[in-house]
Length: 190
Image (cartoon, rainbow, N blue to C red; front, side, top):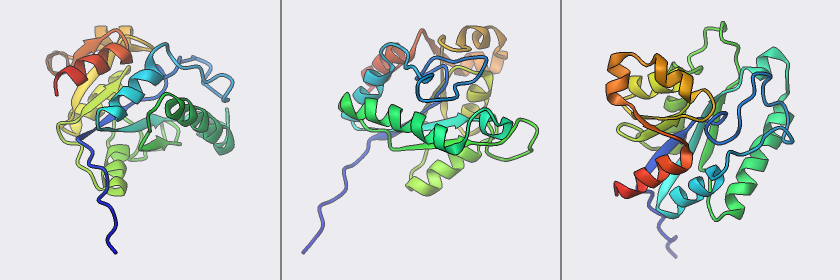
C-alpha cells in the first residue's frame, strides 16, 4: 500500500518573530501573556500557508542566556503563536531560535546564518531566493548573506532600521509597513 504524496510547498518564507509577528519590548517578551501579536500578522501567516508557502520563524532569543525567561516560557510563547495561526487556518512549519547572548560567538545568532542553515538541513529545503521578513538590520544582513530576498517591515525596530541600511542593503531590500502588507505583495508575485 502506498503512502499519499506529501503536500508540495511552493516556497518557504522566513519570518523574524519579535517586531514582525508580535509587538517588541525593550524589556524583552518574557511570557505568553506578554506575547501580543501585531494586528493582521496571524492572518498573514495563515494566508501564506493557505497559498502553499511554508512558514519558518528564525529568531534571536538572547533573553534565555540573560535569564529573563526559560525554555518553558519560550515554549509557551511559541505554543500561543502556533495555536493562533492554526485557529486562523494556517501552520508554522518550524521555529528556530538562537538562545545565546550577543557575545557568545555562536554561529546561529543573526546576522550569522546558522538558523537558516539549520532550517534547510532539518526541513530538507533550499532558502536561496526565498523571502526573509524582518525588522532589524541583523535580519536584513542574514537574508543578504544567505542569498535570500530581504523584506523590511516598519513595525518593531523597522523604522529605525530603514534609516540605517547601507546603500547595498537599501538597493536589495523591499520595505512595507507591516507583515500583512508584505504578505499581500508576496502573494501578488505568484
